[in-house]
Length: 541
Image (tube, rainbow, N blue to C red; front, side):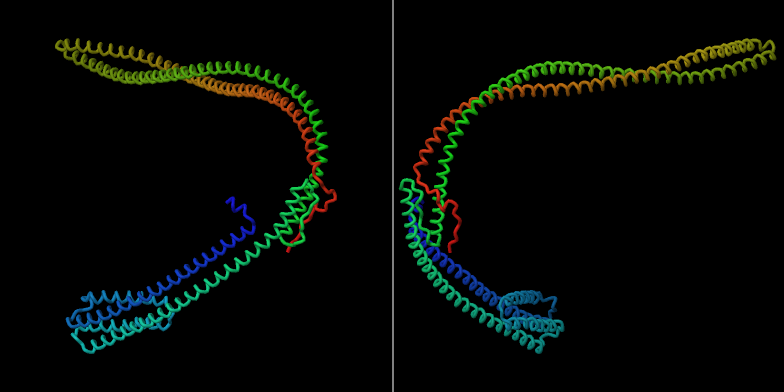
């Protein structure tokens, strides 16, 4: 690749021309091979079309012969159409082959062949209908039907043979035309490619020699100008109106621009020397200012560190307060649980007392029953005493018993009254207990609500303390970052001071370099009145 880059333009054009010619020949060969393959594919399709047509015609002819023979055999044996399976199979074969034959014929642009194939369908229908009619009569061998079947089948076979001849003739004609076109196209392509390669070769060689002569003259002028003593007043010949002339024109503009640039560099070096002196003075002032900034930044860093320590202490206290709030919250939760348990116990006691009141009511009902029994017993004892008095001496013992029973009944009534008084007192006490328990339950519920409010307040206090702690942590981080940033700024200010010292040294070097540059540009010879400094584009035909 390096050797090719080092070759002359003429040799490069010769190499390119050679490769183009070889490429043209290769491309022509490819075209010839491609065309040959396409034509061969077409010829192969024509051959396959002919083979397919011949195969289908043979199969249709065989189907007609087989159907004709089977019709005759079935009529001789008095078989019906439904009993003859071979006729149906051969009929399906013929119909399918005829459909395929029509498809093949559709690819052949021959109207006579198409019309001939279209006639096969009606002929076959006529032939097949005659055979079916003969089977349905079941009259044995009918000579008239046999003659008709043989005639129709012969007509069908003749039509098939005629269509086969037309198809073969068309395929042969198409084959001959394709072969002739293939030979003509290959010969024409080969002649055109050889002529094109020769024209490309001659044109490129002529162009190579022309460009080489022109470039050598331009290179000679540029070499003389580059090997001199910096003379930028020389110019190339640009009288030709082609690309090489345009190249010479723009090189002349470049040389003029370069001369103008050298002149400007001379002027700029003088201004650069003065600027270097000003830069040295400015760097000294900046150095003094950076020292003052460094002192202020150190004060900010010290203040930030103190702030970080104070916020750290506040954060610690806030965390302790948060822990105490958590402890109070836990205690409030336990108190709430105890109050709920107490409320449940009061509710249970109230239900028990209410049950006691219902039981005392049942006792009242029992006492009423006892009083009723005692009253009846007293009445019976009275009746017994009356009856004993009537009986006289004989009933005296019974009167004593009746008197005792009456006393027992009266004592029972007195006892039930005492029990009733006692039960009334118990019911009054239970009513007071239920009322007291209801009041106590209400107080317990109110106490639970108070505890719940206290728990909610403690949790809110804990949340607020956590927020304050987070804010204090963030403030501590910001203070620490401020302190770190202040230290970095202080370090940067110190680096700036160091950099300004380097700038001052660089200014001295710049002043020295500008002097050397002024000496270097003084070596060039320039023309201040050069017309190519602001050269305009030219058009080349």
